[in-house]
Length: 341
Image 1 (cartoon, one colour):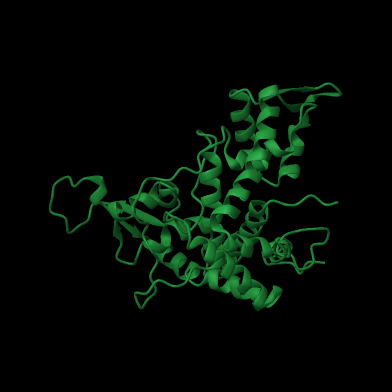
Image 2 (cartoon, helix red, strand yellow):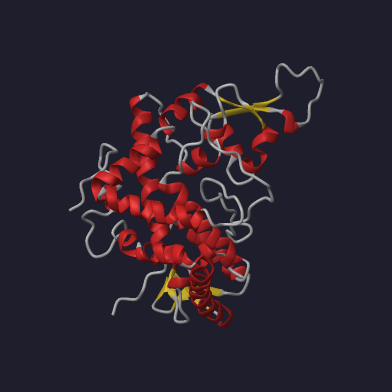
């Protein structure tokens, strides 16, 4: 019997698929505009750049967003400028009063990014069926509407230093996106997936010594016999950089030991310690407990999301790549998207 896949796993994979397709299409359009650079990922648009209008915004107005994104990176990569307002006559205005403004490249990038989520969502409706995507969106929206705190538009950028925990600043409200008519558009599916995942992650991490990111991506595939570190990117589906940071964090805190493979001395293995083994079991139990807690707390709304497991499952890989968004996001030599076979 096939093991039941956690709802967080399905939602994560669907969000990753959406983000990859968003990023790839953005890169293609950047090239069409003659912008010889790789655009930042969707998180930079969703959690920051969409709130930086043509005339700029004071840093204090987006300070909460700056703390969950990579503000320094956006400035270094040439998408924003940050400095005192020329109209401010004070000799040394505080940094919170500085203006964040899009650069010329940033303005072009905003024009590419603004309609992108709608473009990708429309593709998904055409690819998987409008009714199927609408049912999933309605279920996610009903769940998000019951949360007792506001959440940002996308998952926050996490830090390797604190073990990739999804920490958020304490704010009463997050800036909201507005259309040209001044009205906030309905959230697209990537926003809803992000907010469901983030709410679940925050609850999980309140009771876990390891972050959900490390637990689900790395701890999950380790054992006491040892797994070759070079195999972890393939087993987990995350980057070598993230694997290195995760294993390093776990080793420093006693969850794993890293040593040579007895059968190949130049190859390193990561083995769970007794503490790591206990944490693996605790991860599995807590993941199930939080899902059950949500079922009890949100009742029929969570049941609606559970009923849509089949919908979400059809958006992520199983045995075949046909019809799967992750397959549609495979690169072709010209930077486009390959038809999955």
